[in-house]
Length: 330
Image (spheres, rainbow, N blue to C red):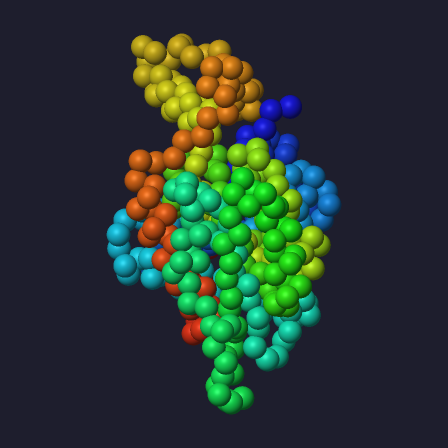
């Protein structure tokens, strides 16, 4: 069996067609706030059957699609930060209701910047930590000044640099600092080019570093670390086979739209999408291996997004944003 590698649950759901489109144990909800360009998609894997169908652990996967994230527009990025903060607060409040984290007193949060700071497409996590305001070292003068959240951060590096699994490093830090919650920031792999640098995924299931590019490491979850883990990720790479597949799909649609070329590409058009992708992989991988591609301006994209995500965390835990709940269902 071939695998379309992606870290985005919304893309896993999109690949389900025909009889599998309405997956049992999986719910989908889409909405957009009034006067907002941010599209929200929530995929909830409700049980084991849904987890098997999706290839994802049970939990909530929230996707924020903001097509203009690539532009240097401070107001737009601020809007995305505010929405990310609202959704982070929602997940934290749910954890409080479930008694997974303390409902009263300051919340001790450990933010983990996953990835290799020396490799730009993988440097999102470390750059977010570079912009993050941490306050664990600041001791309040009295009870009235006690903060709502106490935040610390770590960039554990990658196994090639440290010789240790990230999960091993975090278990030691958790033992010493006893955080209530972990927020893991990581770069992801996408299935579609249009989602590179324009999509933020927030999930309460934790994360498995490297899974999107076939480099599976030890998972970072509540089960493996003993602490609830929220994961924030942005896709920065896409497989070359996926790019070719999208290109061929566009070419087939173009040929079919013209009378003189309507008969061309019938063979490819009749193949199911999964079979098309498998054929492309078989043709490409012997020549190029598992090649992954990133945009030419990825350094600026990662830099901008690192500020957007760090600001979202600041708003969520230092300013407590209000959710106006003004939703429009498309």
